[in-house]
Structures are given as C-alpha cells and as structure tokens.
Length: 91
Length: 237
Picture (tube, rainbow over the protein chains, first blue to last red):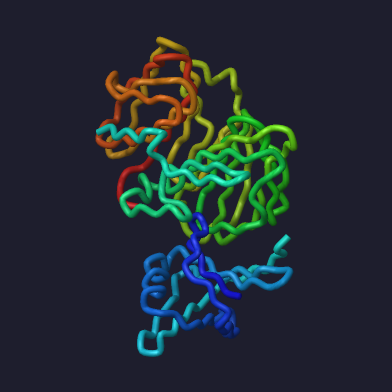
C-alpha cells in the first residue's frame, strides 16, 4: 500500500494499492493513477510531502527534497521523483 | 498590532490517549488563514495519557522544540539519542534531511503535558541533530530567561533560525519590559495564570498573542503566571 501524507501533521492526501516504484540511479520514480481532484490536493503541498510504502513489518519513507512531482493530466498519472528513502520497522 | 488568540478558539484533536490543542494548521486541521506566524509553523499544546505516545515516525525540514510542563516525556531517535525530559528541560530536534523518532509518556501513572513547537529552519538539507538542555527554574522569576537561541550557549539550546525563545514566571503585580529590533515579530503564549501586554491585551491560561509592528512591550502579571515569549524574525517565510 502507498500513502501520500502532508509532512506537517501527517494528513492523508492519497492512499492506493495501485502504484509502481522504479529505481533510477540515486532516485526512485513513484507512479500512481489519481484523479484530478486528488492530484490537485497533493500538488498544493508539493514541498511538504512524505510518501510511505507500507508493508507487513516495515514502512519505507520516500520524499523528493526538491519537490520533483508531476501530474500527467491526460493519463491521470502522478509521478514523483524521490531522492530520499528510509526503511524502518512498523513496531 | 497585538492579535489575541484565545485558548478556547484553538482546534482540538482528542482521542482516548491524546488531547492536542493546535495553534496553527496541523494534520486534519487546515485553515489557510492560520498556517504560520513568521517561521513559527506549529504550536501544539499536548496532553498524553500514562504509558501512551507517538510511535516511530519521520520528520524533515523542521526545527522541533518540546517543552514539558508536567510529567515525563520519553524520546528515542535513529540518531542514537534516548532519554526522558521533564519540567525544566527543553528538547530541540533539527530534522533536516530526516529523522525517525518516537515520543511516549514515560510514566504509567500520570499524564504528560508538553508544548511542541516547529519552526521553519533558516537553511534546508541540514544534517539532523538533537539537543536537550536543563534551564535553571530559579532564574525564571520575574525575568525573561532565554532557553533557545540561534547561537545557543550554556543551558540555551541552539536552533537553526534567527529567534530567541524565553520563559518567565511573573509574580502577581510584577512587570517586565521587552524590546526587539524593528521589523521583527513577537509571539507570546501564556502557560499558566494571567498576564496583560501593554495594559489592554489580557492573556489568560493558554491564550496567545501575535505581535507585529510593536517592538517594545510591557508584560504585567495580573496573577502569578508562567509564560513564553519568542522574538521572531520579520519578513516573508
């Protein structure tokens, strides 16, 4: 499961099981389908986003320190190029 | 100008282990007209029940200050810091590029009350760091005691922002004066008791004042009081 949250207070902006994460050199390209309204809500806080991949016993925290985020409106696809990744246990 | 923010008008988050009174937009509370005051971005007045707390979670790009008012707060982070702070301690975390931490009530008997303030840092991508200090409670009496500043010093935590945070215990009928450079801002939060600022602005327990374009203030104790004052930079943030 993937969650996109606001970094100040952790408000949930998007949650989905449909996503891909692709390693690109020192970055991670996170892609997910979203509707226009959800994309707008996320883009409003593009400098303050935390992305979490939630697994059974661990969470993986990503963020893009330079707000590299793009919404392809035709395909309704959100693309985030993260430059930070930290894995930590859920307990 | 002195703008008063009464305690009762704060947004409250409450569940079976936490009561959080929010001075600014935070989490589920979002008000575009109440995002920040200068670099002061979060001012949470939290009460956590015995044995409960916040599990491991990340922060980034924030200077996080915790001031315990009652009880004991246990902290652990991925920088290797662990400890318990109580009244008389100040904790400062520079989240920078990212820190993971947990915060729990260290007691299984009594609640912990603490203020948590987040400031925007004056520089991005800082190396994460942690500090806790003990201030001299005796020095609070009728005196503005600096406990956090840009430069830091003995018993003053260092923060990555051009600000100074003072604590004071002001006795009934006593007065303190504060002056800052023109163009800066002042934030006052009355923790306990009742104070007045420049005679007419009265702050009861947990009320706040955001002060702009007024760089010299007189604070009067209408009763024995405990308050904090932050000398903040002006300009856009």
